Length: 306
Length: 182
Image (tube, rainbow over all chains, first blue to last red; front, top):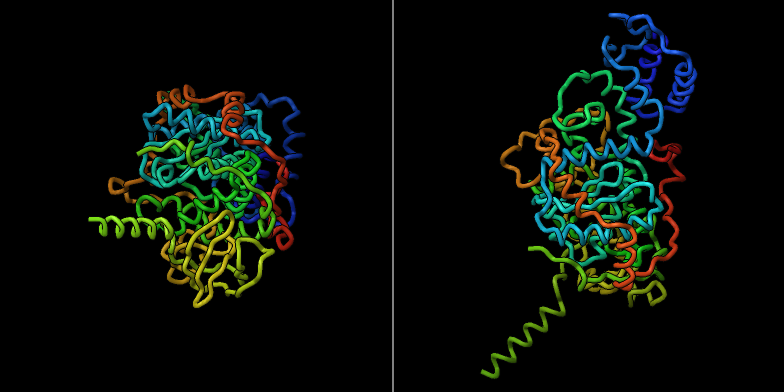
């Protein structure tokens, strides 16, 4: 126990900052793997055990923190099952903030397009689900486990199916690259220690809810800029692999670059690099690589909403 | 009557030709302007990063732009549409604040825009309650991969093998937390 607390103190300092040259995480992981093979101690947990660390820990260990939960959320990679549980909780909460547009034909259409693009991502171990949120904000969201959402505000700005494919592909890339899971993994230790494990959340998974914080607030957090650029690069490739015009996503970014920062765009602009930066970064990667790639924009097959 | 017809037809044609474009843009990197939408065509001029252009039309991965007295084709990803500079920490950029580097462990601040917002804001997301009914609708509208394949094939979409794009910063960056193997 004492060892665990010390490890937590060390890992807090190494995880909360920019990763240093030395890989503390790996070391801790290996140490705890060895630790976890031992049978669980039967004596009661100490009521108050100060962390014996030289550096101050941001959060003192609370007596009732659950080492099992901590282990699940921090010390190993999430299994596909855990990933889907996390995504299920986030998606359910997000739908609590913004319901789906009440148009089943529209919802099925985005699932048709989205699934076809997702098939090009190489990730077939999760069931992909796509939805259009009844909200005027201009944004799109991805949650682990294959949950992808586009707002009505963004959907209405799209001109053809290739642009929809490009937007969905960017979000698909967040899932295939496990960008949100990496954020959770980095912040879960603080979360597990800082959040009381006793809050009641109706109809949902308490352990997962503790991990993701309040409601769907994780969808309001920024990913690393590099993660967004990576999702743009991968997204453009996924859409092109699916046979779409590869310029769908860049065209959407061009449109976003003209928008003012108002209540429809504030969250998008707060959580993403500026569209001009995204175009420039994508341009650095693309160069002449798509000069001989062509695809369909399927403007006539695009499902239009009012 | 006939002349009215001709005038309106001419106006309609002009509007179609210029379409929605003829919009302002800003060059994102030092670039060449080509005579046609192909890098194998003749170079007609060059433009500098930050230079203002007028976007005339687009075609695939190319934009036809006017830069001063020059007109030519430039790569779509070498220009941003709209005014407001080249992005980044660009001065006078209305959304420049959006580019600050984020700390994923940071506690999200309360936005304080609740009730006024047309869109989803942080506070709404934070307060969101699990909606099982909407999640069930999401599941009900899901489609099987096989169905998506059939639909794509009917739409004339053919999958092809295209390699991932390189990370342009990979060489200059020692280690990124996003690239660790998972």
